[in-house]
Each structure stands twice: as C-alpha cells, then as structure tokens.
Length: 57
Image (cartoon, rainbow, N blue to C red; front, side, top):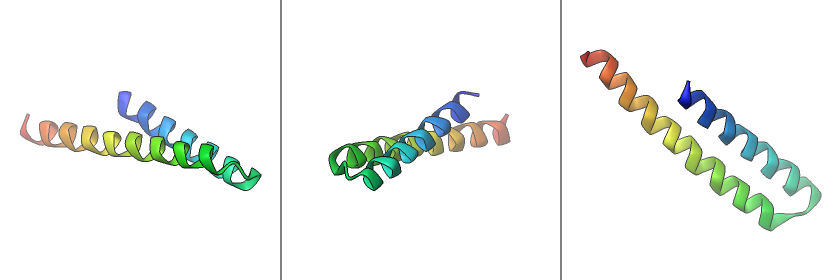
C-alpha cells in the first residue's frame, strides 16, 4: 500500500508540473518534475525489493 501512495504522489507532482508549465511558472515546474522523478524511482526500488522478497519467500 505504501508503494501506491508514493506512485500517487509522483503522479500528483507530475500533474502540478504540467499545469505550472502551461501557466508559465518554469521554476515551480522544474521542482515538481524533480520531485516526481525522485518519488517514482523510490517507488520502483521498493517494488523491486518486494518483488524479489516475494519470489524468495
């Protein structure tokens, strides 16, 4: 459940970034994209760990 929450936050920050870019706020858009990328990679790492643990367990 925790992974889906991180993925949801990554999508939220991506959406904020797109809206900010359309409205002309480049700095806010850049920060939101960076946060979305970090959260997405954390989500992928957690998914991989739980996938391997599930296969071994």
